[in-house]
Length: 115
Image (cartoon, rainbow, N blue to C red; front, side, top):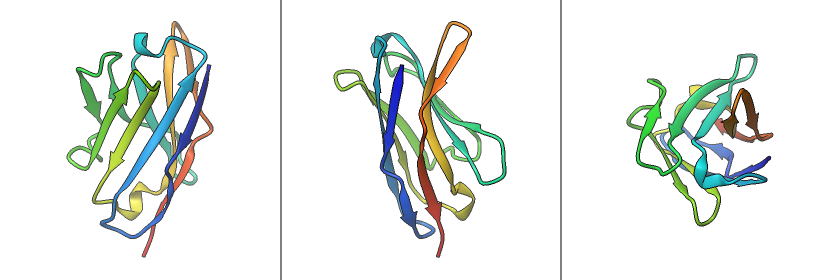
């Protein structure tokens, strides 16, 4: 199981970014996917979740209305569209899934929101 995240960077407050995560090593369209983030000095937290078919999503309260998770099962890719970014969104963002009792996630991409 492998994930490769991309799309992070340095942006100013109020700007947008789109993160991508390409998955391999498992049957992507059978599994729900999750975006996580780990702010500096803090624990990893769940940001957004999408079911295997993309029909249902869920978000952390802190990002509702600003972030959108989506997926393209033909490309084994999950996306996170982030808008109206705030300094408190600064974190390493990673994607992952759960197979049985085991959680998997990638190394992540850095998002820094600063003026």
